Image (spheres, each protein chain N blue to C red):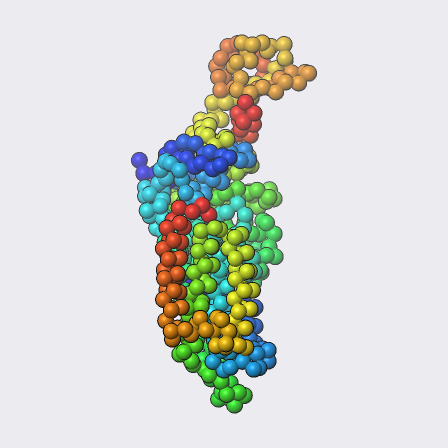
Length: 284
Length: 208
């Protein structure tokens, strides 16, 4: 199988944090959401993929190539959106574009100009005068204008209004219609991922929780609601996490069949959202 | 590497501050350094222009890691920085020559528009200053580099202006011209190469 992005046993040691044995694979034509709470190691992982920081162990392959040995070739095929704008604030959009475009072998001005119009960006505007949303739009326009085969984005939708977030998601969805391209993006907004992601990779405190197809995850977990009188030491063990109030409980389980057998009709079983799954696993 | 040079030149042309410096520095120097000897005035101009061209991309690189996400290897980034000094220097000589030649032709002042002795004297000083700044930037990161830049800017310009007014009588003037400039040239080349190799080695594995 040819993976567009392959991360094997990746680790990075800092003085106060360790990213430990992270592994996942992304095939061409799919979107992978990368989730985890603040400080889980999402940005560190993305920086490692982009070779902005040096790994302590493990292997990263992009387009089947080692990410350090073939750094230049790989970066020419990656569209990268930082979590914050790193473009030169004193320049205008047009000036910044003229600087960045020269580095990419497949830069296409027509695509860039189309996104400028679509995103309502004025090429004469100075980058420092743009709002956070506008800066993200500009970053996205740059990332999408050189025919990249892999788009990597670090929290692209944070701080954006729901309308623009939806627009971005539609754009991302259109990109992967070309089955050779893939998207890997980290976010806190798990509802965005429920709309577009095919795979979810979840890390917590520098460690892997899972990397699986989204539908499989959503089928595997469920939220259970019922009265507190149903809870005892045995039944509690059926839950990954529980939240109890004076009137009842709500819990996440990955053992739906057992729950049905134990509680029968006494509880309400609902589909878990990615946010529920993230919340209860992190709180565990 | 040509792509980086193109970027640097664009940054230089996009900067209004640079345009002002390039246009007004020479007339300003004629006012503030009236008693300066012609050749030392030439020295100051070439030094200042080279430093100005270097400043723009250097400060942008300090403030943003964008270059590192572009398709260019770390080795190329380091080698380019060290090679670019000579390109900046050449641009400074050409611009100074054209500017001063026009001043001469128009009869505004009688000035040196090309002085080989001063070109040989100013290059080692530029190499020494930039070998320190590049090393700090590649090895210690942006916050230390910006402090080093500020210190180096103040100290080096102070020294260069002193040189303009005192010439060979100043310590720096004597140092630059001793042994017909051979000693300082050898020292600068060694320091610059040492700085290049250290930066290449350390930047390879540096966290950005």
